[in-house]
Image (cartoon, rainbow, N blue to C red; front, side):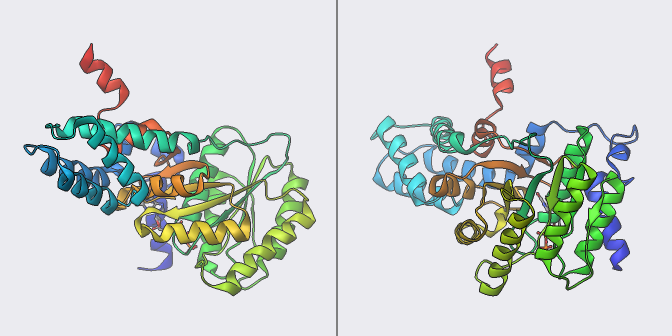
Amino acid sequence: MSEAEEKKGLFARLFGRGGTPAAEAGADRPKKRSWWERLTGGLSRSSQAIVQGISDLFSKRKLDALTLEELEDVLIRADLGVAAAQRIAGKVGAARYEKTIGPDEVRAILAEEVESVLEPVARPFEIDETKKPFIVLVVGVNGSGKTTTIAKLAAKWTGEGKKVMLAAGDTFRAAAVEQLRIWGERLNSPVCYAPEGADAAGLAFDAIKSARERGSDILLMDTAGRLQNRTELMAELAKIVRVMKKAEPDAPHAVLLVLDATVGQNAIAQVDAFERTAGVTGLVMTKLDGTARGGILVAIAEKYGLPIHFIGVGEGSDDLEPFTARDFARAIAGLDSDAEADEQNA
Ligand SMILES: Nc1nc2c(ncn2[C@@H]2O[C@H](COP(=O)(O)OP(=O)(O)OP(=O)(O)O)[C@@H](O)[C@H]2O)c(=O)[nH]1
């Protein structure tokens, strides 16, 4: 596939057939699914693994130590982390030891516990309007979904009437710069870029100046993907942050770490390294639709307490949504949404 075709495909996935948010809203498109439908659809691989595991364990047997151990295994396999898995199994045990307990009751306990871990970290992304431009640095390993997330956020914020500027800080990859330039064109947002191989820190400095001169509300800065164990690349990221501060002392105002949910426990090492180097202020978890290990969000929330702002459950422009603990907890436990549950109880 040529690069042009590849790009066309990416736009079609992100913005619908016509390649723009407006085209996506066109009359010939099928009816849009609600966020709950997209969330449960996206999380279906994770929830099916958990729901099936729980159904297999709790259909007939009396609750004993072995069943609880097996429950822990199901939850650990879904990447919830050992601590959360043990606590949830403990709660199930406390509720019904040596009695029978149905899968629905176990799933309700699971949802409650997951919600209580996620609630403190599910925080909306706040743009401080006194900072103009509000500078957002986007970091992460290769292919985690940084550029796609930037495009989705830029589409969302320009749609809200904000003036967004993009900075193509992935100066290693000409295709990444091109990708962002095209998105800028489609969204009518200026894009700051430099020739391939240029110093990314220098570009960051220029982008801040330029965004200020243009009166942009938000500057969204892409960076090259870097593996967290590549010391020289992490040093380059630290330099980008240092140089940004020369242009604007309290920049970056937000540092979003984009994590690919499909990597499971490796995401923990990524949070560690990027936190140390760039002072991550919040997380975006992408590709929850491509994994049965969506529980990793729980493990990360428990270990770091960092805000989770958005989750991605698909490649479409509206497949990135603010993160809400209750919806996520109910979806991953295979329960109905609150609205559906209310309807059934009415
Ligand atoms: N299924 C799915 N795919 C996603 C999601 N977010 C991003 N992707 C896909 O992941 C791939 C990589 O995304 P990019 O945005 O190019 O990733 P990147 O982090 O900018 O990559 P580098 O510049 O190489 O570091 C693309 O094919 C995206 O369409 C998501 O939430 N779900």
